Image (cartoon, rainbow, N blue to C red):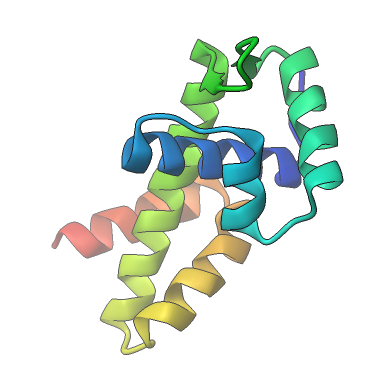
Length: 120
């Protein structure tokens, strides 16, 4: 099943929050992303039905193996693109915001080239 850009953003957010706090619920995602509770609830339902997350009876969200795989890929893309833009002199906050937009559209080939360039 192909996941949309918005789904990738939700998975990345859940991943970041899990790493930061050790647990995450829909309200945490809502606050972190600045989205309404109903929007997050709908997205959580779609991600759950798609097999990307699991939600406990207490409302705690965990990533499935497939969800974690996607979240880690998007997080890595975000990190690499942010580092690259900062190395070009872009303000870190702007670089992070721009990386968020680019991470979903850039090809693996271009990302790998940037990754190699950064490692030099």
